[in-house]
Structure formats: structure tokens, C-alpha cells
Length: 285
Image (cartoon, rainbow, N blue to C red; front, side, top):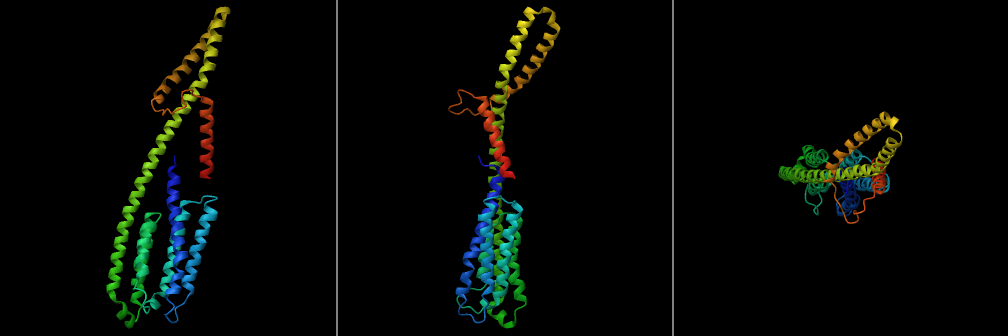
């Protein structure tokens, strides 16, 4: 059974890896598509691609060997998209003169990519607003010639894309929350059954010593009657221990018996539980 923190971490770091990989692989195509545009700088696209590649390598070489925090994964996702936006800010005026590219096409695709990949709600909202707001702000600084080439209609279309991306993001995050809650419930149920098995194992292991003490007390009571007061205290202690066993019967109904459990081995159950606790503690470090 997968633990709830493992599911959440997988969502966050997988989204960061996919986003960084898209940046690393697709941004260089901007240089190829802009070959016919004069004076367009090549370094924004290459630099953005390099940052995406560095983040992807970090995820694969560092995080996979030693898992990092969810916060770091989310901030790397935001950083990756911030670098993409910075590159687009520099090259946007040149792309308006590129007949092979539709205006603000990269920003529109960026909003949808963020909606699909965002690891957390706040990161998705921030990045989508960045893809929508930055070109609109930049449009305000364009000269009249640029305004004539672009027009405010494209800004309105971009705003529609952003709205659609936000709706898509909310539905996606909601579905992830449902999945995480389901995994949490399944994990808690599994832990409860495991705890019940551990309690049953402790009860079974303690039965034999208690029976030995009871037999020894009975023998001493027969051969040493004068020790009756001390033996009475032992018997009362045994009764208290047995009273602790009775509530454990409630947990027997929660046990999930599988093939091979006919011969219940309490020592192996305790050893397995201890190994699982150690493995879980190593994953949380």
C-alpha cells in the first residue's frame, strides 16, 4: 500500500520533472522557428532550456536518490515557469514580426500546460496569471505599430485561455485531492489492520508465560499453603493481565485473514511490523 505522503510527493515531483523536460526540449525550437526574424536574440530560449534541463537533472539525480521536500519541488516548478516567462518577455516583440508564429501562441499553450501539470493550486494560479498578465503588461509598452499588428483582441483571447486554464486547474486539483483522500483512507485502514495483527501477536506471545505462571502458582499453592497470601497477589496480577486481553478480541474482527494465515506466527508478525516501521522512517528522513 502506498502511503499518503508518497502519493503527494509523486504528484509534485512528477509535475516538476515534466514541466522542466518540456522547457528543456521545446524552447530550443523557438530559435529554429525564429530564423527568419532579424536581430532576435537566441540566448533567452537557450538559457530557459538550460534551466529546465538543470531542474530535470536535479529531479532525476538528486531527488530520486534522496527525496526532497514538497515545498522545494513546488518552487522548482514555479522557477521553471518564471524562466520561461522571462524568455518570452524578451523575445515577444520580435515574434510579432514572425509570420510563422501566431501571436501569443506560446503564452496560450503555457496556461494549458500549467493547468495540466501544476503540482499545487497556488503554484498553478500564480503561473497561469503570469502567462496571462505579462504579455498584457508588455502590450501596454508597445509602440503604435506593434499595437496595430497585435491589437487588444489577442489579449482578450489570452484572457479567455487563462480563465479556461484556471477552471481546468481547479477540477484537476480537486480530483487529486479526492485521490489523496482515498489513499489516506486506505492507508489508515491498512495500518489499523496491521495494528490489530500486532496486538494479536502480543496477546498470543504473552499467553504462554501467563499460563506458566498460573501453573507454577497452583503447584506452589498445593505444596506451600503458607504462601497463600503471596500467591493470591500473583493470581490477582494474572487476572488483571487477562482483563487486558479481553478488549483485544474486538480487534479480531478487523483482521484480514489471507491464505497461509491458518498458522498464525506472532514472532514473524512482530518482525514484519518492525521492518515496515524502519522502512517508513527511512523514507521520511
